[in-house]
Image 1 (spheres, rainbow, N blue to C red):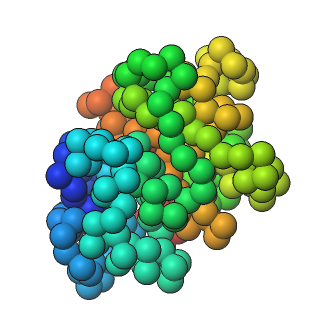
Image 2 (spheres, rainbow, N blue to C red):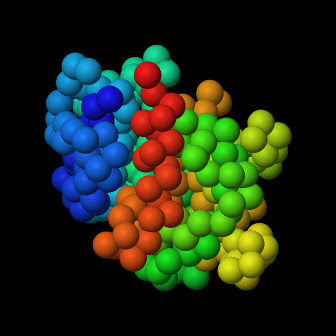
Length: 230
């Protein structure tokens, strides 16, 4: 299984994501520049990395969502290819209409850069099958616009259809207002599309996917993907 990592002007987590994919697949992923109009042959999964695409002008992810390559990413997602967007990648996927909701300015109006505790809300996906439902994990966050918002109707649908992937929680696993770092509704840290093949999340699993990085909680996500794909 070969992965592709999309690279935009301002991406700064593309190599981190590439290393995580390489370590689990044994093959260097294709680094695809945003001006390309198609994905390389043989791609099995697409990663949209974190960073500050286009300097976060207009809104975070708004300009990158209109890059030529995103049409190919949308088409691949429509065929059922797994697509993961992390941090700025999550913002891009919402701006491109591949995921519902929006990422707004953090409630405290400050950039947040630290490890956070998360609860795995749905472990029945290609991204999370190596986790257990309710399992506690730690991923880093590094964002200024990570406040997930969806209106009540969309939020009810996400909750009712089990499309919340991760929630911010406390050290004991309690999902509380105090454990919410950015004001996201329902402490949501990541969501799936309707078919569970597109995942967007603000925390960075690729930054804790190797013991040398002081933690391996994120490694299970990439292992899940390899296990799930033919």
